[in-house]
Image 1 (cartoon, helix red, strand yellow):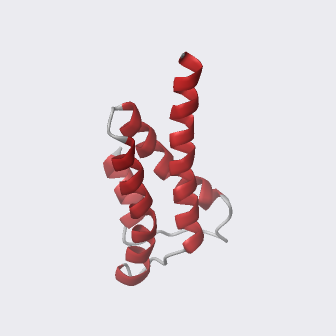
Image 2 (cartoon, helix red, strand yellow):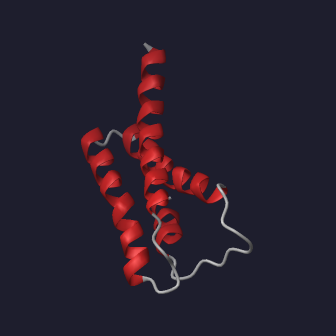
Amino acid sequence: MLAAHLAALYWPRVDIQGPVTWTDKVVHVLLFLAPTLAGLLAGVRPAYVVGLLALHAPVSELVQHYFLPNRSGDPWDAVADLCGVVLGVTSVMVGRALRR
């Protein structure tokens, strides 16, 4: 899963036919939702999971913008990434509360 996450964010070239739509943002949410859920459900300290992924969201967009010539960083992608982290944390918290 980590390899797919990193490949999606750092692949040197992404060819998208037609205009980029809201589906791009859904992909970003899912790219950060999955590792958040995986880390939290695996028992990694929430501060580590959330901190690392919250830092990775804007850094990945900056890397795309400045270091990958065929990619462009988008601040709204970073917002979607952070929404994925929040959704992952919320899902785990609600799931644990419902099991009690």
